[in-house]
Image (cartoon, rainbow over all chains, first blue to last red):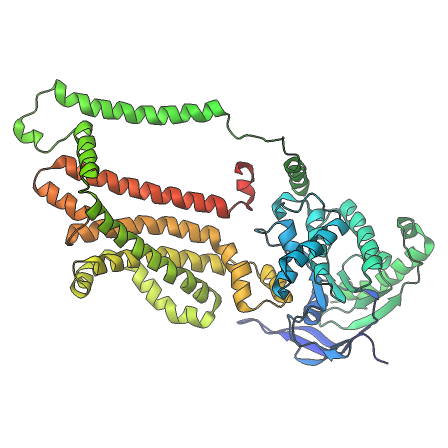
Length: 257
Length: 283
């Protein structure tokens, strides 16, 4: 029985013109179950984001297999959607038409698009802001739009590349709660890349620690905290023990050169 | 930063809260001063020739606002202006439309493709460094003294600002946004339509504004240099006959044309940049 998302021996080297090639992923293996929330933490530049781009179909690995639901990933597809770190909203489009972007490209009729975007705008709590432009929104609101846009095409897999990194601490806490609520409601498989161990534990079923570049899976931690999670869990002994364990694993990768 | 934007959003959501940049009176005041200075200038120009004595020979070279106004009125009333105006306007608009039709897509293409960029770059650099008007004798030889040579000279003048600005704007494209639309399965055409062109729009508008100036210049010079008909031809012929008021009338019509086109671009720009922060207050 193979996993829902399965990566085997994935290798990817960037070859920028006039510069030394950079090995981003080396013999990278990963297994993700359907409906699972998996976080990936690792030192900066370890290839976490690269892997999400490979899954999204925007980057092609040099070798190795990546399968999703038994099918090899060949390019972008509507079964996957990404929430981008710097939101990636089209500044010349309103909230509503940003949310509808994927549906528009899929050729969905205007009426259906309106219905879907309205439902998602409600879900992320942006009712009343449909005709606003991104520059009129706060960071947290922008990322809600980014989330609604990713959910609009109803993907099976949600890829999140440090989605809350650009937000202040309080907004981030709030967005984490929202994300868990939406995840429980929408039942998606989520791959969540972050630098914050707290965030990874709080959200995930499992947390993967990656080595420094070229990135490999170093260790995977199962997070057995009960769901639904609440904010108080973050101060429990169990939570902090996990945090320390993951930190110790990560520390070697950050400090060793 | 993000807080102030959120605040703005809250304010914008509340319809009756509007923060005007300038009060009505302030705006009226500056309009008044602007119009007033024009009126004073015209009055002085009109009155001075009545106060001092000018020799008949010198008088030949001068005119007054009332004479210019009268000449313009007669030209429009009798319809003699329409033919030269029509010729100049069609040379101008045909050349400009052609320049947009070629410059915009070409700018996008060479901005997106490294190969095309390498192929076109030497031509663009060389052409752009050459004053376009030096082509005029050759163009007259090839296309004659009619509409053809005029359209081509306007085209050559207007093409480069549009082409180069579009190219610059396209090079400025945010890679993240390209990845966003690609991740939704966008084709290269979708990428251009949804990201590249909207992103380059401020550059394109700036190019268009420059292009209009170049286009008017092209029409004027082509007609001064030698053309069968047009406003410029009318002006040159009138100058030969010492009809100074007619020369001024032509000048005013050219100026009015340029102003009208610039205003049109301004309207276009306002419509297209509603999403930009600095325009948020004006809408």
